[in-house]
Amino acid sequence: MHDEAAAAARESGDRLAVDGRAGARGAREIQADLARGGGRGRGGPAARGVGVGAAGREVHGSVAEIRGCRSGQLHDLPEAVQVDARARPYVAILWNNLGIEQEKLEGTRGSLRAFKKAASLDPNNPVIQMNLAHGYWEQRDPAMNQEFLERLIALAPQNPFPQVALADWLQEHGRLGEAARHLDQAAQRSADDPSAQSYLRTVTSKMQRTDQMESRLTSREGAHFTVKYDGDSDQDSWTIVLDILEEAYREVGQKFGHFPSKPMVVVLHPNATFQVNTGSPAWADGLFDPVLGRIHLPTQGALTDRAWLKRVLRHEFVHALLHDQQGLNHNALPTWLNEGLAMQLSSDHWPDIDQLRRHELSLIPLTALEGSWNELSSEAASVAYLEADSATRYLINRYGMHEVQQLLARLKKKQSLPAAMQAELSLSYDQFQSRWMAHWQEGRTKAS
Image 1 (cartoon, helix red, strand yellow):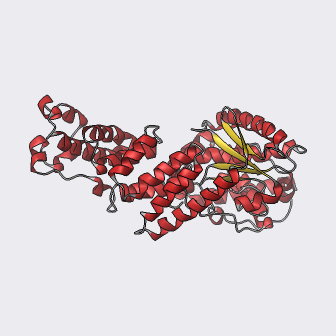
Image 2 (image 1 turned 135 degrees about the vertical axis):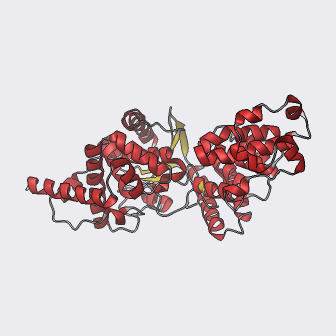
Image 3 (image 1 turned 180 degrees about the vertical axis):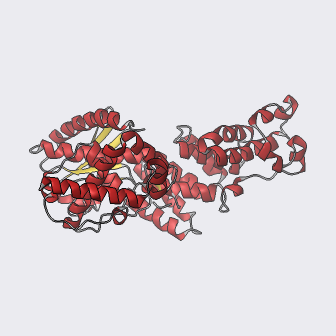
């Protein structure tokens, strides 16, 4: 669900490419909510602590002392305590609770070492193992593999999170049928969260349809992309598509300072079935689906208009790259900035946008362009892309790509866009919009 079935089971494609967010909740987002809820306890982070009884206090004092504890102190426990089979579960609890405190101060990366230590001391404690799984999930640690997740399912059979996490792992390895079955298992275990259950069932159905559709396609793998296509009609297209994407991988990745963490899947569709298979708006030329982590493209004209093909593929690749970089919090990225960066980083200059600049326009406030654009008319969508391109170009030219990266990093850490702009650019969101609009009007005046 690529970077999206975990946030509630949290809120789980673009252009004349829609980036597929459309208000849908993503797989990794659902897993994030499940991890925060089911894995850690519905009461929030504090619920993830494990109580220590009298025997535990004999090992290392009360749980309250954990706040002042350092990992070095736990390392300095007497050897007899560390190897004592009766004491190890209690020492594991101390490491687990230390991990929770470290996470509050340093984030997931700072807590992972303590959770690993706790899990090694007590491999059968489901709360400790679930906390480790959450840390692995946040950091995309390769240790969160099929063997680890199957063992976690055995330890916590009624918890939906490991089912969704395993479904995500299977999906990333091309095993959609098996992934759908685990999503269905997760849905059955999410009865206390109707929103998560409904979304999980929706994604399960989508994954089953995708599996059936892609089972008829031929698959070819490159260094960084897997292209799925109709073996008869698209034989010539896939090699061109792969060449363009590998070039984009090098050029855009270097310009943006980030490369995908895993191979990307690209699906080529006959024009007649593109909208039906993807659910894209009528005005979309291509689409990135964050739920299943796929770039979708209609193939008609791919061989006759290579300039169009290159423009759309690079545009969609940037969406996929941004999604990969932002991880669990990719939905915090406003659509106008997502689309604007796709246009700027892919050097995607549209002739129709240039023509539109010369017309009298009623601009849409950027705040109204933060969510899904799927319901926009073709005319409104053109204005939205024009504004996204202009505002993002102004942001990059005025403050530099480094500051834009820092802004994205703040959004990734769950800061709101207004708070991130104030902290990073030293101006409010309203001030940015006013200055951009003044710049816009000045450019139009000079052009006329």
